[in-house]
Image (cartoon, rainbow, N blue to C red; front, side, top):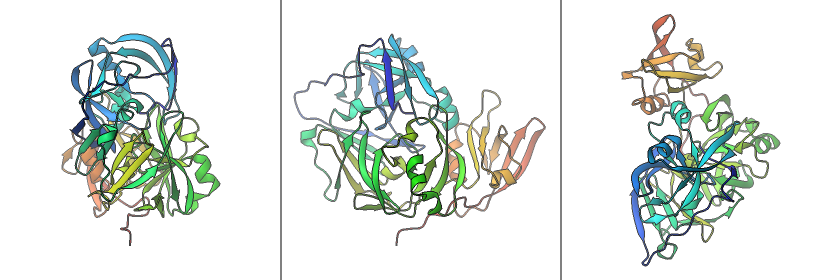
Length: 402
């Protein structure tokens, strides 16, 4: 979830932090995990923790979950509204934190929004999210994400040295403190936002892809639920024939053509969003002070960019016997042809019992290009029934760059 625009009531201005005073240059190397194409790191709040936070260049403010705010008895200071990638307007409370830190890097005291993560957890399948680290932390130094090594490095700006083969990509910061760079898709140059909180590889906004009729250049497309953030995110899914950030060509990414009618994915002043599905292919350093993003290919650069081959979105079932709930079914896709309906509960997939602990393994299974069928057990009011789900490529398959 990201907060792309905030209106804060009762906090006396924009959300802001105070710089942390230090005596000697610092470098911190911390574990980084990628869950559902989101980068997770640990942070402390008011010297307590560690807590699990999403690191999000697309969020204009850091946030804490309502559960964490209650646990720490954080004091409310006001209320506000904002927008995310979904179409729903978001309302939240503002709470005061005396300190928000990642290692020795602190953004100081903040008045920040709270967010109810329960729906996000259910739809996406996160087992634990304590909050989001937004733009404030990126102004404290240079942050380097290496998804292939599972490592985050934070450095004071004076200590940072880019990797030998890293390529500098200049960026500007928009009114939400989000990086914006020049890139090209299908040979068309345009401005794109850099959003580590975007689970997709590439998202194209409606005005841009319609103006250039890009849906006609990408071969097969399907319409599907593609994520959640202030409501379901729907789009046409395809595979871009070519994409490049500056002079760096990226293997044909899975691409979402946004169908949103409101929210952060409807901006007309840029082409779209470069998400973590692309960024994780690089060791990427964010230097907000100099307005430069450094990119160097990492060990995962040539990994296949896969997409679901089952034609259904599985999330966590509501409290009860467990299983995974079918939240969306692609028209004429494999799940629909097998008679699976929205609201069904999958209780087994292959040899795996379906539940919170296996959701991401099951999603990965349903993407595998060489897998032909997956036996699953579906539960509905009439009881359990076995189904042989015949997988198929719903968009053009991934091919290695020549």
